[in-house]
Length: 219
Image 1: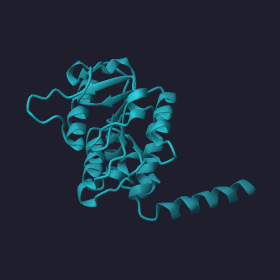
Image 2: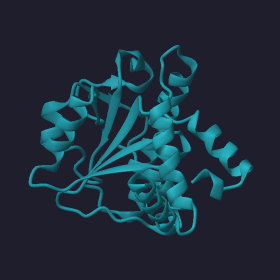
Image 3: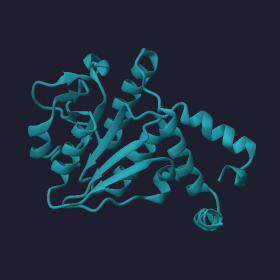
């Protein structure tokens, strides 16, 4: 696929891959406002978060193209829409070695500036606009994180919360000695994903390559 992109384009993609991380991932639970959903994706992409897990329970995840600005093609999206999507997401992420960190302005939470990013891979859960995280996430969370506030309002808009938290944690992560970058296999997989998303007729190119490869194996 790389032969169908310019050298400058390939160099740019490789530079961006070096800034990508799976040490932190984001999980958006039952977001129903397309503007919030899209702004959160754009924020994740901007801070180098590769994986976004989307829980569709009562609400289908809708994207506003005017807000997302094409950022979706650079992300790896994982959707959960079974009968128990929040539970499935929590179990999947725990099996992948992530600690479940729920965002909440209430209770005995860890303030953002005190959050220890070195404890291990972190999945940050953001809840629905009005009620926040679900009881399922609340019961299965390993830790809770909050953004200190000093005004009368009790919480930030979800897209604002995501921006504040991800800015703080990714900056802390990049200044640390933690091995947060993608490994070589991950970089290659995502490079292929990006090329397929940005090269015209990429599926047809891959189909032709696979057919040619099968024919060569028969000879």
